[in-house]
Every structure is written in structure tokens, then in C-alpha cells.
Length: 183
Image (cartoon, rainbow, N blue to C red; front, side):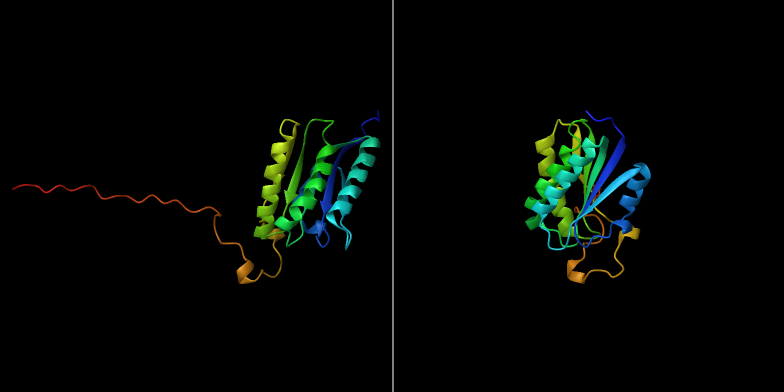
């Protein structure tokens, strides 16, 4: 068994994602001294990316690194059609932390991409049920920080609704029942 060198955070970014523009990645780089970024190459499918990620994680573990966390950064336009291919990729990221029995796989959509938020939330929920009890959690975060916002807003039809995503519940005060007073 290899001696533990230290913790490593693995960041997997789909093609077109600017890793350096993500405040979540900045925070991760401050928290974990060693970060490894794996970019999806143009034209590379998610299954091929998953194989590269699995091989790189195995290499890091054999070199004595202990996985702190893994983060998947989805490109704008990620949708339900991408979930199946991404599931194997997420499982590969998850497997690097199983021997430790702790860790976190974070799924992060592009900023203000409601479809990606829904798809990644569904993926995280489904895989979380499968890995329950391993000590490694799979979570999805909505990217909504002002510093992560694109310079040009998306077209009005593609914009996420303003305010909370769940319906607002309002309490309406009722007037007391007034009974007629007899003279």
C-alpha cells in the first residue's frame, strides 16, 4: 500500500467550461492544496471522459493521494439526455473515495441553466440512493453567485424565473365572523 502524500481534489469540466471563472473552484483550491483538473476534449464523449477520469483517479490513488472531493462542472445546455453518460463518470469519481469511506462528489451546473440544475439534481438524487451507506455523498449545487453569471443574459425564453423555484405560500387573514346583534 502506498504512503499517503496528501489530499487531492479532482475537478472534471465538460468542454467549454471555464474552470478558472468558477468561485466554487477558487474556494476548493484554497481548501485543498492539490487539485487536478481534467477537461473534456472537443468531440470526446462522456463515456470516454469517464474512462480517462477513472484512469487518472486510479493513478492518483496509487501515487498515495487521498481523494478529498470530486467536482463535475457541466457545460451550458447540459440536459436530461446527458444524465446517463454522466452517471458512469460520477460513479468513477465516487469510487476514488470508497476506500476512505468519506468524501463528496459535487455536481455543478452552468450559471442560470435551469435545465442543467434539474438534470443534475435528478442524477444526484438517483445516485445518492445507490451509494447510501458508503460515507461518500453525491450532491448537486445550483450555480447562482453574481460572480459566476455570464456577461450577457440568456434570451428571455431561456431565463429561469425570478424568485424562489417553489410556489410562494401566503397566509391571508380572515375577517372575524360577525354575528348580527339584536337590538
